[in-house]
Length: 406
Image (cartoon, rainbow, N blue to C red):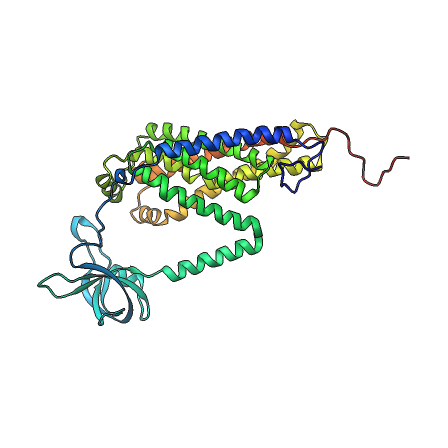
């Protein structure tokens, strides 16, 4: 017998649990109201958000699009060591001709690194145009145009998600939109404005998870149990992140980009950003395991309505342990893929991984992975306990299939 608060495919046994649904609704609404209120308090005024100068703006400087019409390589003596003992790519540079939209044809020089990476006739590129008074107009390569392929991939992804997952897929896409809105309009500006990064991360992540979970998985007691487990994981990751960042002396300054950022936003707490990133980076996998654990408990309860809670917990944890193992691998593989260039450079320099692991740049990612994994591991048993407690329980033994009284 289904109750009014459940959209789950797993049936409920016993009478409708309207009382429990009402209590959980009040609790979730209170958490949501607290998160929204905190967002309102932390939401930065636009004047408080530092704004750096656009490197592609200035008097006589503009950006434009063009199509490559010719590529002529030439020897530019590239190779050996450059300034500050940096290695230069050995190879030719190229004189590139382009058809500039709305203007005459133009040319620019492409350095050996860019030319070696590959450029061909017909490629769509972005250029920087310098038209300074008293000087001839010149052009500089910025990047390739990627708007169409990125849009096409996004459309293909959305169509497949909706076609296969249907309404759940559509609501999941809405959840992605909510996440992007919270990140770009609240969390990132609040970081730049000097608000406490870990507080902003916890508040923003809480609001995101409430919206995403109920949009993607429906309003039900099962989803609420996953939400509670997710919120626990967020809290544990935040706490561990703060402790680990201080313990390992991570300053957040690991590259030239970090130095430019702190120069642009002097109130920014980069060390706090490192801890906040641990919370945000772990949301996807954390959400995955908590939803899976809640669903596992519901399905196990549907199959064994009279089983004791301890038995359901033990069965669900066997599933959870497998999920923990695969999720930990996911975190490691995700980092290895995103940091492939750094790892290749370490290998090329013949420096030991143990030595490089203690550097700021690699240390941040290692701590982020470990802290995220700790929060993930702890969230699994907690979510399972909550789900076992909230899952429906049969009050009478159901009749065996095919057996009729009399």
